[in-house]
Length: 113
Length: 114
Image 1: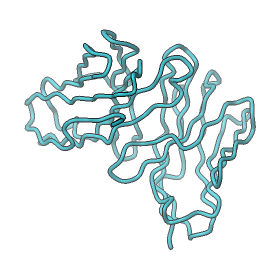
Image 2: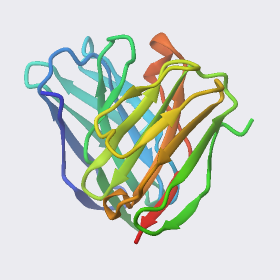
Image 3: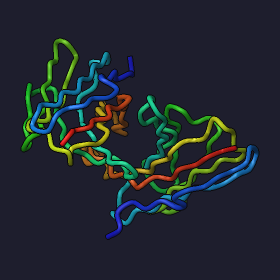
């Protein structure tokens, strides 16, 4: 119930294409869904996040789509660039006092020039 | 403003040896976390702290101990290292309450146990 399942494990996209990464969860108590971006040799950094009261959130080329009934959310990267090549992690947390994250297993994205 | 720093960056241990990883943050954050990152496993929470002098277990606490004697520091200890503890370790920190929704990560420590 505490798991967050992420797919695909790896993704190769041509420059200018759309990258899509999917996550699914079971626990309906989750109320915050962030995406973290990690470049090689660096720590993860918050990219974008969404709460379940909205179905979509957009920040520049990055969009989160959220489907509450299906318990799924996804990250869309429009006009993907080589500089977007990184590992992306979805996560979920509960407003239970400590706000701990449960992370997905990560997706390694490579954008070809 | 250095953010979250971790010491050391790399370390090689022999089975049975002990070591301490140091995490420091200069953002006056209440909460601090230790994660391990393994291929195909994502980030898994080892221990966390919601304030100076407090610690709690995460998903994978066995074989590790932690201490938070000062608000800005969070130490992770391995008393008797095992090859299964070969991993990249990340420290993170956040504000409390709703501010905990964003965690700030350090650059990581790559640990190899032979």
